[in-house]
Length: 331
Image 1 (cartoon, rainbow, N blue to C red):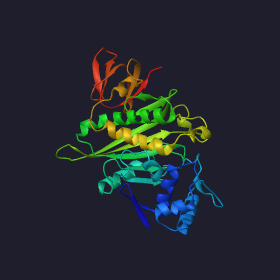
Image 2 (cartoon, rainbow, N blue to C red):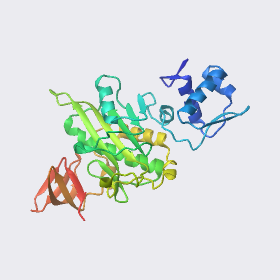
Image 3 (spheres, helix red, strand yellow):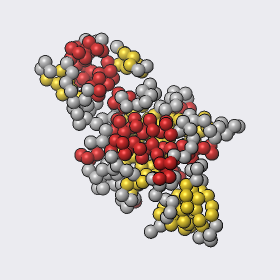
Image 4 (cartoon, rainbow, N blue to C red):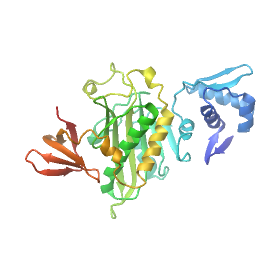
């Protein structure tokens, strides 16, 4: 049996989960659930059993009904849709993927996923960062997601989509977690001097016109970090929003994912640089080291240009503008 809610076809199980998510921490009678979903009490029990097997804490008692425990924080399509501006977009959630960007790109290329659709994994085995680097993505320690966008513009505009993604994450984390991050040109976010979020933007363009067919924005946000299992090469670089798992579990992951998508879609309606990207950026006004390939050099970061590029003063006094490259604040 299936139901259609907000234009999305849903099974009894997913409809029940949406109902429980809406009323998290409150008991709903089995009779009410069966009545609203148009199914039998037996079908409700079967759906509850299946959800429990997936890891949802659903409490029940004789003649009391069912309740999704208030501290349940498991990512779900139903939980995310409650907070989306456009709840009809395609959402795919996996326990494990090689890379959310890779999966999202495949879906977009074969026409399975449109503008605003997104893919989330609870862990990645081959998470990707810029310049072919890996992105450490342990199970249930972060939010690993890729959003498909079909904006107007050319490949030149893709830098502004990266800046928009940084602003979207900044705003979502501030709204949901009450934490203010620092944005580092061009695609990272830092907290207490450590990287907590990386963004990888991949564009597919029309070869003849140069126009963007679609863009996949990959976002890896560290919620919690176990220093005992963190790879040695990341121990002085990587950070997380929370220092212990119990605190990290207080952040509503469904709402956080939804708000990131909402903010990203708002920011990319018109491709222009957000004032928030400038005001919360940690690079301008500092001596920096620019790394490009195997070479590096010192410079002074002057300002973020309106097209998202970084204006710097080189050591010889010449002013140049960077569209790409790795930068870090010199110490």
